[in-house]
Image (cartoon, rainbow, N blue to C red; front, side, top):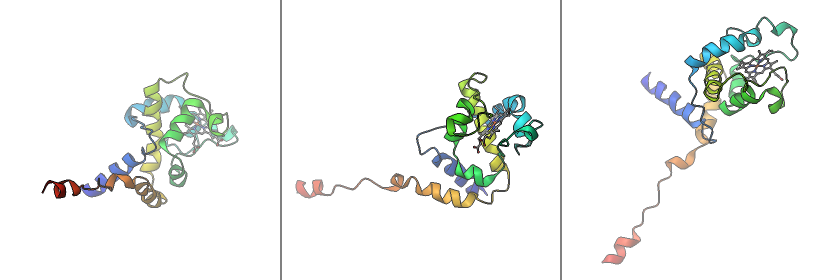
Length: 153
Ligand code: HEC
């Protein structure tokens, strides 16, 4: 169990391989989510908030593990900050950078990402395998230089 936990931490670390580090605190993001996002995305992130019925397209379902595997932290952070239109999505998803501070944007992103992690993740293992491949350079050791010692003698 401990090993599984460590692997999970490692994999989420690797998803920052693109250079983007979320540094969000899901626990702190919860309050902002409940104030600003629940009306559309729903209490449990299923995209079925009170206002959802009237909207086309429908608000995203954050518990969809397949979708969560297709997107990354940076995408989610950017769409929350800049709005759906910034990522080719509906402008019904507005930009929140005027309402949330930089750290708050990151915290609410972490909270949104946690919905898919909490849900039974059917598609998750395949995605994790891909992520691990993304950073092979880490294991490569610098080549030893035996030539130096050889010369000394
Ligand atoms: C007025 C309703 C509404 C509110 C409020 C709202 N959203 Fe959205 N959101 C949407 C809609 C609609 C979409 C889907 C856009 C599309 O598919 O083109 C969306 C999409 C998203 C996506 C993209 C998901 C994906 O898989 O592409 C994220 C992330 C998101 N919203 C986060 C948030 C967060 C966080 C908040 C609160 C700070 C929030 N939304 C508030 C309506 C809303």
